[in-house]
Length: 169
Image (cartoon, rainbow, N blue to C red):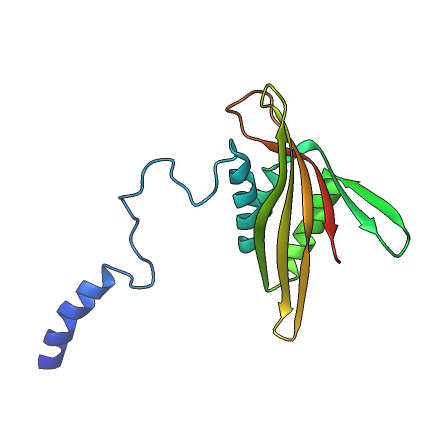
């Protein structure tokens, strides 16, 4: 009975906190996020990286315009292939579900141009993507992405209207 008297207070103390569920951080500023600010071009690229890192189509889908198109070169057939937003979301979802890890590194911006109203932009940027299906099946892709961005007015989030992939894959 003496041992129960020693264990009971310890049990009561531990039952009120779960060491596997840390408490909510009350010090975070309201509206703060790990995501980039899509009002900036750099924020769009940060969010693409986060979408790939977390394999999260919700983050990714918020970046794509309803008129979105993806273009890549099919070198075997010698033609450019284009698909729309719905097919891109399905393809990206399939990628995210079938890999263990995605590591996307955005390198230098090769070119950036915006219109005089700051509502349209074209950005070319170098990237490195490592796709890990399993520890013995890893693919590395290097290339350039050229994104056409648009927004209804300055200070609104940029949306990706067109993504042209110019990678070595």
